[in-house]
Image 1 (cartoon, rainbow, N blue to C red):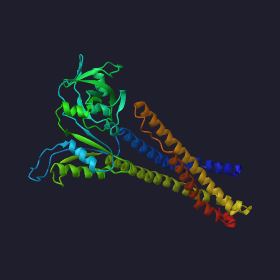
Image 2 (spheres, helix red, strand yellow):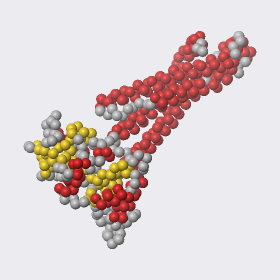
Image 3 (cartoon, helix red, strand yellow):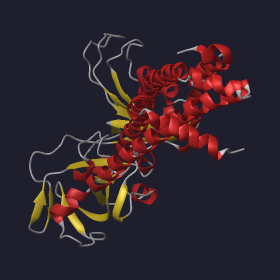
Image 4 (cartoon, one colour):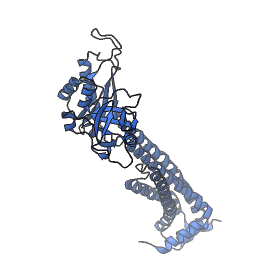
Length: 416
């Protein structure tokens, strides 16, 4: 199955014209390198963006009230309105497919120091949440816990603080859980320290946020039954976009808003954003395959052309082989093996070099703290790339091999 003499002859033939062989192989090397590097780079960028959005449910949306742009049922254009508890209850009753729905209160950010502990103080935003908000917008806890249902039911004066609030009001390494801080003149017991995603935030940086139970905030800040924002997460395999239309219809009906008023309700659909990111990188991957495969194909054509030249130069040699009894299939196999050897060596070196470069990029990101990017190709992609090299390397020698097989011994021996 493996003829050592044949492969020895192949490498002697290739090394006979080193510069030409090198330039031919470089076309294949560069083509496969471009393909792997583009695919690995695209995957790394996709992972990097996904890492930035980590912790936010991909099938969720946020909705808040705006200002009407149309007059309707006797109400003037430009009217402000407010979402309330009754809206949430009606949405829960009429809209199906919810996994979670969580109202939020987020007053205007303070302009003076509003959080105090002893001699330490700072200016931070305050937000009222439900316990299930942590399922939609996941927080990474450094101390203690997030809010729970009992905190809301008993209107407890407890709070979870962001990491910068902790750094401002507490000493480094100090456990703040169970200790009191004064926020807007009211004392709260700290139950945890945690941060959400840095890239998706609706009330400033979560590291500078003080979170208290929703019911406690409605009562202490005289919100009545008003709500600033609510977020909803759909069940698996349910499109949150469809639920969003139903929710907006209910809100418009409850508050006498024109059905076609697009400015009265504001929203931010995380599901749509994730789909856009997915579509973007699908296009990037397709472009990578087109550019990389096109470059590789150009290299393969170069291999085929050089093999044609080689066959022409070796016409007499092939004629002598045929005269000595070499079968046409043997000549054909010899030429195709030479083509395959050039393509395979250059191709696998190109894959290895591309993986090495991607690994260096990965290590650099690990050092800078962005280790979630993973600039590497999958095992399946590497297998497909290897198969492409094998197939194209074989096809590149097919034309020259047929030409060599058709050489007649008499004509070859008489050619000068």
